[in-house]
Length: 572
Image (tube, rainbow, N blue to C red; front, side, top):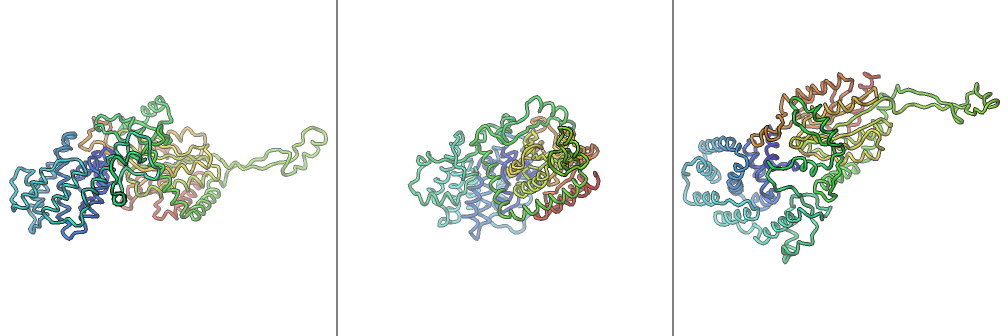
């Protein structure tokens, strides 16, 4: 259910790249309409600013429940009509939600001010005249009258309500402080079209506590003084979601394609069938036309964070890589072919000495070689969907460990990341078979966003791997066991993107089938589980016995080594 709520929030926000806070007002969002509202908050308001305001100035009070309710209802009322204008399908979600909420607060035995205001709010939405005392009625009327989508005006309005009805004023920020912070946000938005930015600022969400310190220390700082600042911004289009040029949006988020349009379209015609019909492909190496792109900077930030985490325990990771490499050498490469060639140096071949005396052939020595490339190719596929956000660095390090151990042995190794963005399957290539070992560090650029069609990604990889000349082929998939790409959310229908929902048992069965087909084509598939224990059963259904569940990244090389040993026993 949470994945559906995430998809609803991201879709309404028109942004799949952020981590969602589902308890913005200390009340966990569990309904579909609640997720839709949250998406609207992220779209129209600076939620990080609001969150900081709530944490710093509301939650500190004993009557914080009442204050939070007012903040929540004001936002809900403000976006209520806006959502429906763009997405008429929301009306059914809203009707059902508001009826349930009214029933909930009508049947409460004991009611405090917060409950009374909530009851009155949902009564008014059902055209019922609220039965409230005069002060509560006046407060509710003010909430219902506020309709601005401006963050600054919203915060100032809350300050007005809190001062008027709760006499809170000592702990609230001054209007000037709020204005200065919001002005800085506005300047950031104005610079969206410029290429200047400070690489040390890598988020389009503001750290409000730091900004307020800055404005306090520079009390005379005005909007005209911001002009010289270099600030990184998200240049997301303000166009309506329904009119977005999706391909341009994909390129903006993930970089240019390295495959020609013709090759890509041929793959789409061949592979985007059945439940995946209509899904387009985008193959990228993360190369952006604009070197100052917000999304490139975001990837660079992921690289920096993962590198830092790796270096903090590099000795342990390097030891794990060495051990895994030894395991692979003693299992997969144990039976690789050895051969000898004649040479002018090496081990003397006594029977050939006479040749050097009577002929011009002076190759009387023999060198022994082991074909350490063998006949093996290994592909690593990283689930890059947004559900992996909290584990980005961990997954990148896992992928790096495998790639490093393999390439130390000169085994042909290729690494991809995959996720879905609107109607596109995005395939990010981090290294190819013949790249040098230095390319392994590109895996640290792994960044999670969007949703995931595991089955289609595995289907694509199966076709690519089939073309290899190697006779022993292995595919390692690092995934959270939750194939999910829900496009028909009641907001953006199937007719809008032209593809079917990919969720629940349908998605699981499809992924299982694609894994089975890969195995039937003599590709050994391992699923490395990177999700939460609650989803472990799904991973087992998809990969059978060929999966590894790793709870401690420090044991990762050991567990993967055990699996590769078992593969070696089957294919040698």
